[in-house]
Image 1 (cartoon, rainbow, N blue to C red):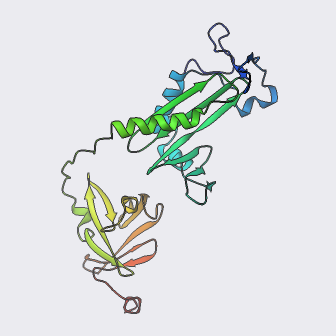
Image 2 (image 1 turned 180 degrees about the horizontal axis):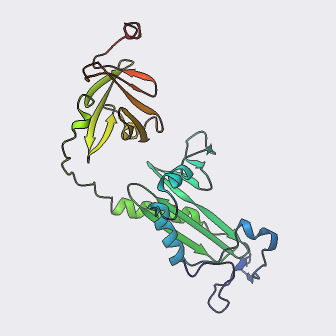
Image 3 (image 1 turned 120 degrees about the horizontal axis):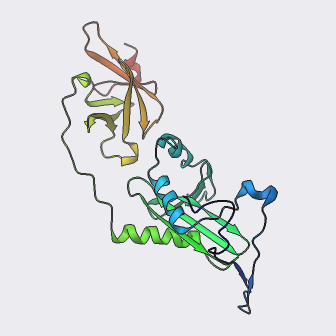
Length: 261
């Protein structure tokens, strides 16, 4: 982002205006010195540079920021629209639901300028940047969201092609159907990685695991993210029971009363 900084290129920068809502007269706005407000914003940038930033938000580079950290930043912490759940805030990012898609980004404003960034992250990785050189009267955040939606409606993301997994003997005794509280959970291998899913459930419930040590796995994506899957074995080594987020999993539907046997 070599064209982004605190000091604009005076010869190349756009000029901002306050457009009177009734007369249409455009009054030039000066480039203010930010001083104490500089940490709040005041960056000068270009559409190309913010486009690069949008690419990073969609698919972060681990050397700059851990993807897990960016995922956390894009997780809703405050729901500002409690009726339809269409607007929320994460750690610094504004989240907006448009239809079934959640877009992240933020708006920006200075006297004479407005900006909007919207990114649809996984799995689509599509973003839009909108600038306007007016103090009011434009809706760059809304337009950016509309542009992302228009692209994805016209060119939906192709599903990832299936590839066969390698044999995973470490998962023997773990894969297949398990039951907890009368509900079935299926453990399976996808692309050589352990996953679980709830038959007939939404994809959001699908969970990806990574091995912590011998018989312990941690959920890193999906349902109960961060919780442990722990394997209990019989003396001969066969898997007898599993616990996910401390809840017992058994091979057959089992009442709580019988779990104590």
